[in-house]
Image (cartoon, rainbow, N blue to C red; front, side, top):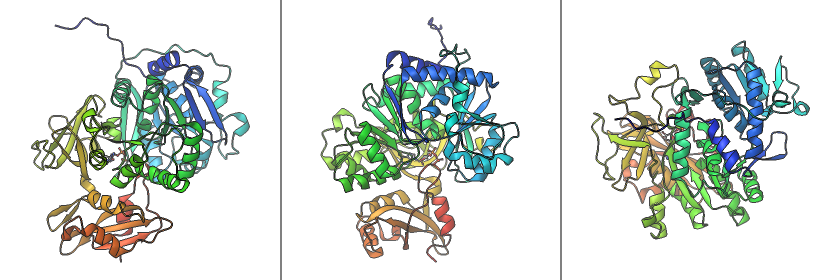
Length: 540
Ligand code: ADP
């Protein structure tokens, strides 16, 4: 027997319509490429979104068209998210840190019709325009007065598109599984692969984020998404913030510790979201100034493992650290590590032990770990295996890429994450490695994450990575690569000594290399691929 309730399609435009009506005065503050700080509210933003939607219609944008963005975090990028998807088109966010080759691949693969670009990235467009589809039109995300002298023909100005348009829009109806957004993963091997989000998956993700992270996502809170709008929808914040009434503080392009500290201090940011590398920079600044930015109390950290020392440094200063795990293919939230009530009174060290885990699943995501033969493994906190997920916010295939899609699902349709993990009896997930980052020495696995965690606890280490290098006798051996703090000179023997206290002798890196700066991927994680290319045979 079927239920007898109405079935209204879940639509992205409804999120901002709700936010504008229910929390009209909640703010969007943006550090602009023009150099100033721009302030607006959900109510006024909704009006501009309507104007933009009219403008897009005038430009002939139709349902299913891919409309690309190449931009920092700011209010215009936010407006595009809603106007594009709300109109039934697909918002394709492009990561400006991708290589020219990767960017050209994805613009052509997605067959984008329009590209909205921040003034900062106009030089990229000038360079690559000739290799992109001929009918791709370019819109610069600024006003007439700030239009760059670009060597590009037929370039449109963002504010001209909105000017004079009506301030309401009759959002079209379509099925809730209509495509809404497209994001390519940078891909450690092969070409980038596209995840195509739907209205339904995006709205469900926003709902489950609000339910799972009520301490961060609520009216009155000011949230800083350092995680970019060009990568997995800034972990869904443009959708969950208006739904919860939280204000958004967009940092633009200045993401160093000092700029972030100043912005957070001025805007009284309560909750900041981003990858560990960014928070290492902020922590340096906090140490130098001897205080936290005003109002700061909550850090959501993910994208790669947050080390114990990073979690400790913030928690010691009274900032709640929520370690989260997810993937582009999962919209992205999979787990989060705010502690359950019963664990909040644990002694500091035990709390940090817990917080180092990737946490418990969010509603709607199921997880299993399996051995090499695909047999499910117990959730006993000690048996590692390949992590698989399924749920309404998980992809079913890569966009127009049957080859990449065919190897990532098991017979029951679960998605293979490529992560190696354990799950304990309380449901806490512990990512022990990425399958491709594991080191296999003499037939035994060595976890690069474990080694990195220990080395990061050394006060002279700013950042580090452990990679596998080929070895004639053991197949692979670990190599430790270290970026020292500006004012420190950690010694090789010290670091190996620190490791020797905690891991077996055969797991110790064969060598330690010091570099000025570790290479980062387009999403701000340490690029092990680049390191493997740079040190193909170890430190020689
Ligand atoms: P990219 O392809 O650019 O790396 P994703 O953000 O989709 O982009 O990467 C997802 C992967 O990042 C996960 O499969 C996992 O390996 C890693 N990851 C994400 N969050 C965490 C975390 N909290 N701890 C450990 N690894 C993480």
